[in-house]
Length: 378
Image (cartoon, rainbow, N blue to C red):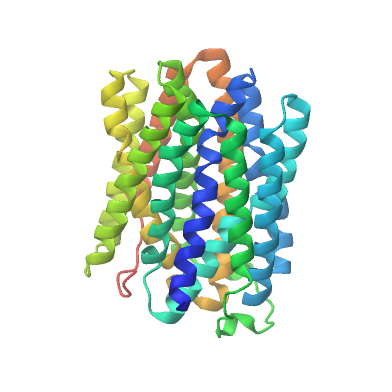
């Protein structure tokens, strides 16, 4: 198998495992009679440990090969903890293994995205041409996941997730090393990133945008559930959103000339519109249809963000830039998840979405003034 094919298959396996678990995690917790504030606490574990463990993982992953080995080990361990969570009924047990799951999984995508971005840049392959296989996997996993939950159980779906996570973990070990300068043991100066004005502006925009998408992924399922949408129906809704995401990525890979600033403005508008109709408590069909805008907005963000960081900072510092973006993203998600759960439990979804809409206005404003490089195609 060609090396690019390995990366595509790895992405497919990893995201399919993810799709059989994370979109259904909040609904699973609700099925265990866990309140919204506790759900907010549990889903905040990943961003919390992303903040705590990011420096450790950065220190461990000094070169490409060590990054691949680390990703392989933590993928398998994350899958094992997912299975144990699915077999648990006690909140304290779920809480403990959610922490362990976060220890192994919280920094995974920051490292994985950096690895794929560096490989893509090194081989002159578009990052999104590999990442779209993750979207394809999510379409299958979420569509079948909700159906299997109602037909069999959450436990069975989470077992499938564990198997796929383990397979993806094994797959990391068969990747070839990437011959780039990042393998040299050079001391990285964190201040270099802080002095890069363009990167810092983009970092703020990206962290707000991506964290809003992540937090709303967790609570959108419970919001729909509160409006009468079943687990199986939610699986198809999420699958529909990812279909739009995949189509967006496919279109973006075919377009040679792209104004990245305009793309990110469109992404911001999509986020605003889909959250605004939730705030208005629009008819459920309207909410579901406009939920597809998540696919457009997130697809654009995926296409532009990480390659832009690698392009801006170079291959040597690109991994550190992506990891910093993951760190700040985690800090925002930690805050939004905890506060969001408390707001929903005490004041309902309307206040939660009103605050979301206000943040979206800030994101849209940032996107308008965002300095974006256009010299190198992503």
